[in-house]
Amino acid sequence: MTIRAFEPKFMKIGVLTAALQELTPRAVRDADPDRAIEDWLAFARELEVDEIQLSAALHPSQADVPPEAMLDPVANTLDLRQPFTEARAARVRAAVAASRVAIADLAYFDDMLHEDAAIRRKKHDFMRRVFDAAQLLGVRAVCGFVGRNQSLSMDQNLQDFEQSFVPLLKEAKARGLQYRVEQCPMPGWTTRDHWHNNIAYTPGTWIALHRICERHGVGDQFRIHYDPSHAILMGQDTRSLFQVLKDEGYGFLIAGFHVKGQVVNARGVSTWGYGGQTVERGDWKDGTPSPRAADHLNAWKKQVALAEHELPGTARHDPLAYLQNRSVDWLDHQIAARELLSLDVANTSLIVEHEYPPARIQDKARLLPILKGSIAFTRAIDRAAACMVALHHDVLPAQGIPVQGVGRQAFRS
Image (cartoon, rainbow, N blue to C red; front, side, top):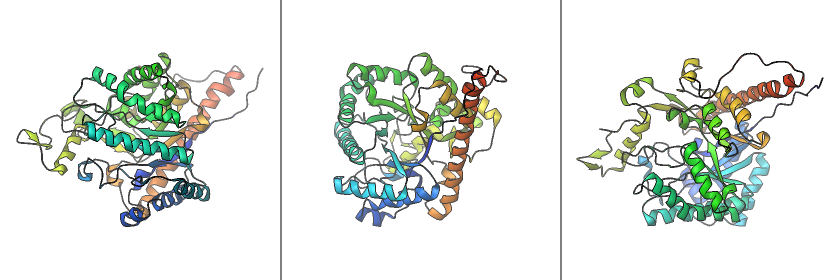
């Protein structure tokens, strides 16, 4: 009889710095850009996380989308209006060492296939600056979107990806970086009725895009930063989604996780169906997109008519919602990730992303206990899953002892 030791493997717990955009007042960080990173690393120490996902974005004075048109305002914690030099990198590295909180990756979420050539060029130039900053900081990955060219069909977007996005991946490869795509469909990104505005929204397109990358020698650069909230929004469940990847031989594609949930409004689904509100949203006036940028926020009713983002731990425990794929079953999420994906668990990041609207508080003192509780919940769930997987897959089988019950199964309804 073989006796296996009980050796659970835990993931690294982090937080995206967009959770509190105004930690450092704008007037302070505009004058001293790297102060925002120092302040966030100190805050992360208070939150008791292992690492941060450092948010980069075009400065509000340079962005093509006005802040009032955004559902979730982005944070330029990493300010790249000026070159990110070795001196700046050294200052950030010193703050990392002082806080004992690592930087998991840099995050810049934007439409990299924008149909306007000038706007696309601006976004690609900024992404290269993010790549440069990541290289100087010794960070291994950048997280972002692919986007969608609104003037093209989905198949034509695959060709556009090959022509314009693959060169970015080659630049990532030259810097020793991975590009990890979050799969949010971004339904409110445009006043048009397209619902999937980030073509890398589902396993089918991840696989198609990765095959393109493989043809050009950048397959190792293209990975997914999986967020279960988006799967819930599209009627998918994590276990079945992971099973598809495993069955197709692509269990290696997921390289990191956002820990953000979605609570589906059953009345909203009954009213509009999955796919969201498509008429009388308020983003169009007299048959054309409204001239008021603030009205464009209403394009997001394609999503918020159906669901509300969950900060992990803030939604009630709801077994029926889990079974209906209307909320994230966090425990099964973490078990399924270990059972079905090809992960180096100890070096995999679980990044808490805070977009729960009533708790989007720009006040450190008020937000601290909320984020701290959510992060503690995330850590506890990951530890529970790790313990179960170690028992089920290592300890008990080694001694010929059966695991009890059936458990959740992929594709079961």
